[in-house]
Image 1 (cartoon, rainbow, N blue to C red):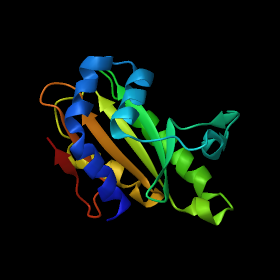
Image 2 (cartoon, rainbow, N blue to C red):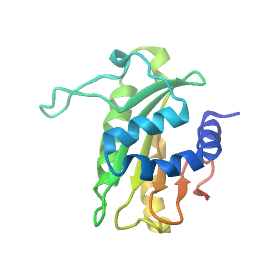
Image 3 (tube, one colour):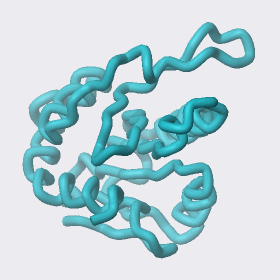
Image 4 (cartoon, rainbow, N blue to C red):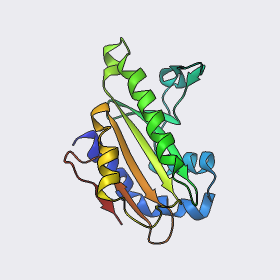
Length: 174
């Protein structure tokens, strides 16, 4: 089974516990991210393997989590979108682009097999609605850079949508 399908099955199998995180943690990004990783059963790799030299004067970049998932490096960034906002999408995308770029420059052959996963916990302006075709098309442009999105709607009628499919379509999990 391919790695993307394995990731999605993990989310599908644990979606009820993931949806409960909204009530358990509230909107505290660091806390809810840690709890999400516990629910998913994902373990840390050595943090040094996932620390990147900085760009534009920033000293270094470190993703929220790096794991060896089925023999592939999974670089994970979790972002929270608060009410009346959409910034979590931009921050996740920009950090995903940085990680993808810097990882692709690695000289080690074992480091060439990776994927960047941006997980967006959404209470923002778009919460409660699926992304529209234009929004999905924009995000899909970054698949070629190995950047994929999982969006978790954290308000009523909770659902998960993602672009980890091999086709140019999104899947919604309710």
